Image 1 (cartoon, rainbow, N blue to C red):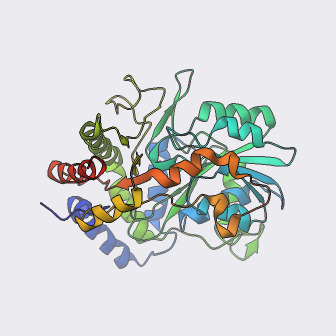
Image 2 (cartoon, helix red, strand yellow; image 1 turned 90 degrees about the vertical axis):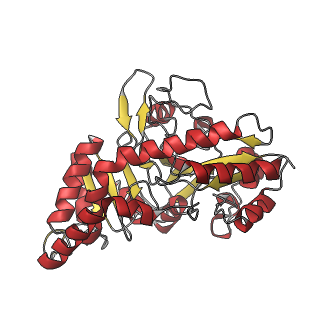
Length: 389
């Protein structure tokens, strides 16, 4: 059996090696390292793939989220609602911009922000909502966009884990995640479903004026060299990373299909195991019942395959798997409202019952495009043997 990797980037590279190698050499030969033709071509190709008017590449996913908020001209102390159960970057940029983060609980089945909790958290100072498509599953955008419209709020999608996923609205309309809100951010960190070989990110929007503002922000506030029209930052996707992403983008749907296939195999193996709660897919386009990953929708792209283990010592399971040569992760072990940097007297622990439960139960198993049946069989047998002993 091949060595099990949490993410097998080398195996994926072997499939596109010829194009990647030749394209990188072309960039080096051209010396067009910054804002070169590869960046512009990737931007256009991603716009076409997503069916979105504007893709603005930048240096990383955290920058993308910060720049999206800067483009909306939010003011210090404006309140921004987001999920308590997510990576810190989502709330980090809110704090960096001197906005007021408002953390709310998530849904137990999807791990995504709870629309009811959003409604309860809205005040006259609320200006934006940041739904995170966590682990690759689309958040409930029907309800989130409805809430935003009712209260005149911006929606900033954090699509760092959801690239390539789709959302089917109640009325049957389908859109790619990251193209639904007023603006969206994504990350091209190497382990993402669409990842480069370093850092990278992008902002998406269908708003022409907002796109113009953001294009200035990413480049020191310049639209014309040495004319600084807005306060900006230095955040650019370099040409080598763009050429890697161009090589991978045509394969993104295939990559996501492979992840869903692996997730189906995981779910099948864990079927009927009392102490294991497998991921529940809740998209409107699913033609099968919950907890079955169907072949007809892409509402979940499985950036992570995250289980919940109950009546089990989760941390002991992590140790056991590592001892067997099986990498795994706990995303995330501490709620944001309990992180030292983001603790606030405004938060009542009783309002985070789901998050407080999830941080004790979740464990993410290896998930990538190169997983094979032998590896999945070995992983699942070790998990089952531990939780049923």
